[in-house]
Image (cartoon, rainbow, N blue to C red; front, side):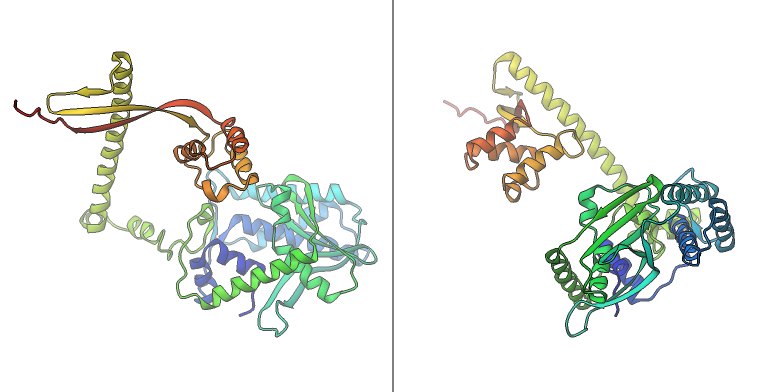
Amino acid sequence: MIYSPSRLETYRQCPQKFKFGYIDGIKSPIEGIEAFMGSRVHEALEKLYTHLRFCKPMTLNELLTHYHEQWEKEWHEAIQIVREGMTPDEYEAMGAQCLSTYYQRYAPFNQSLTLGLEYPVKFSLDPENRYVMQGFIDRLSSPEEGVIWIHDYKTKGFFPTQPEIDEDRQLAYYQIAIQALWPKTRTVVLIWHYLLFNQELQSKRTHEELEALRQETLNLIQEIETAVEFPTRKSGLCNWCEYQTICPLFRHRYEVDALDQTTYTADEGIQWAERLVVLQLQEEKTDDEIKKTKEALASYAVKKGIETVFTKTHQVLIRFYDNIRFPKRDEPGRAHLEKLIKSKGKWEEASSLDTFALSKILKSGVWEPEVVAEVKRLGTPEKTSWIKVSPRKRREAR
């Protein structure tokens, strides 16, 4: 099998999706509208630079006309829109906006000499040529002798950070290929054009970074080729997956939606699922009531100055501990807390960052005092109650 950056990224994203597409060879007619828009934008930019190569510059109006014509020509009924409230016309307008801002930013397009468009590259990861990769570079150009720019056009709706760009693998793979083709090249610059944001991001990779990527990729390919199971991996990207109708995570939803009411009601699995839903809701309600009751008991014990509350049949033991509350996931300050713990080399000891466990670590004395002091400053002191219910022991008869 010949690999590509997109194939490897598919495996990283979801091994099951990789199996459907590249091992089983299952083709889906479904195409996400984001991918459709991206293809039309790429085609238009390829047209623009092809005309420039033959000294036939296109006006912005000509470029947009070509884009809209291709949109209409290539449109098909299996295009899927996932985002609610969005229409095909709005996506078409977004693509046109990408082209307009790019044109206005770079015209007359003389920043560098174009060396290739949709430039195919194929290269080996090992001396024996057992592991081969291939891909297509959106545009390859050179601003001066000895310098090559690798361009990639993005129509995605999110804007990455510089650290994320510096870890991106796709263009780094292409750099490996380019340096093999032109070994005398002294500088390779990786350039991403985030068209929806009218932004350009750049990155450079050292020889050591490329060698590390090569080895990482060889390990990944060997994992793929020896894999027996290809598990599903659920993520936000599942909403855009073309294999939902056959995926173990989502297939049953499509089967259920196709059932008539009688068959639906008689289905054993659905009956058990609905029963579990009812029990789960009851459990959540009970857990909430237990929490409120414990808080009320703790307040009662403080007010009475007691540590045990008795009924005629049971006793409730109440203890209070000094604790430190730290930010939970998605709360302000969480990222700062994680960064601090990593910088102190303590991440392996507290990677789960369970707030109670972290508080215990700080009290245990195993961390250096200065580290404890720094971490404590990111928390909030509080009292934590511990409550235990047990049967009341009867007094022995005298």
